[in-house]
Length: 78
Image (cartoon, rainbow, N blue to C red; front, side, top):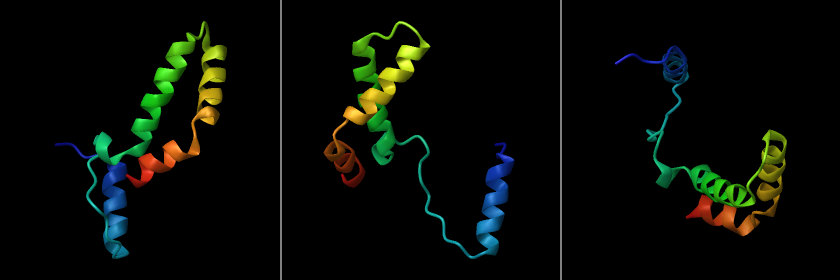
């Protein structure tokens, strides 16, 4: 297995500074709240059917701000 050089350097740095690092599965949607939020955003933006990149960017921003704070809090603290 080839390790990413940045990961290796960070690992060495953390070990030298005696910093404890939690093991965290990188692709675990259950432990990654932003993935749930992206799913909601993608669905809502898709429903608006953007016709070009400018509309897509606009809709993403609008849908982000329309996402209720309580949904984000629920996903983070679940």
